Length: 358
Ligand SMILES: Nc1ncnc2c1ncn2[C@@H]1O[C@H](COP(=O)(O)OP(=O)(O)O)[C@@H](O)[C@H]1O
Ligand SMILES: [Mg+2]
Image (cartoon, rainbow, N blue to C red; front, side):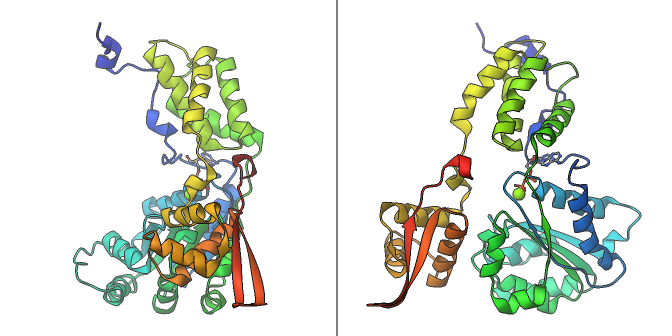
């Protein structure tokens, strides 16, 4: 018997729009985040009047709509025919993927449509960006900004781009305190905090996503309730989206017209395979440092040597910054020892953090 049914062939499915269950998928509006949406838009508004914009730190735990809110505001700015958007460049960089000033500048050049970046150094690249952007104004959104190795790009943008709004998005608001005072005293960002969703809000969001994703009447009530309960207990929309999709796929596989409790239960068993450890949210560098500290803690200088011997790159300063972040995220503990036999040093020790605490 073939694995492929006629249903596969005709593409008939319970899903109306499976993409709506992707975490990247952007709804038309973000319920419960109206205040934050306005806050972000207000930082950008001065640019539309030809003035300088305001800067902003957007923070809160993972999975609570920070990226979605920023992307939605930027999309509106680009697509709204009522505003003079062509005069405002919209630039969005995920700093997890682009984690140095050089990589960020290459990415910005690319988004600005400048392709001849080969053999150009960081300074040359910035001159190109400056030339293009200073003819207009720009919104710079740096998502997951706590993952950057250096913040020179912030300094350049702040000093040499005339009219801009810089949006800095992070899961760890403490990161900003590790930024050079020289930069902080200039940026003076507003703060927009995202609080975790309540169970009712998670329910509202997941119901809406299910309406986008499935034909109406697909979900049996008890099946939906079971998945909702799991997503609420984890306070995590991503888990909820994953479960909705898995239950749908499972029902589709069985050529069922409805998603039943049995399908929902099957989806829950898959969650074990999927659930991510908080450590997996760390950058590769931070993860390898954490591995070293977990084996044996010690003086930060010694740990840096071990890290280098194991093939780790970057400067000592970058290493220190990563350790500070790990500490801010609660993955390790640091203690400064002043005036010991080796002078002042920092002792780093491991501290295992469970998913529930995250
Ligand atoms: N208020 C909301 N309405 C609809 N979907 C939401 C809402 N808040 C979050 N989401 C969805 O939850 C997922 C995680 O949100 P995201 O913006 O990526 O979180 P963060 O950037 O804070 O980690 C995304 O799929 C997003 O579309
Ligand atoms: Mg995000």
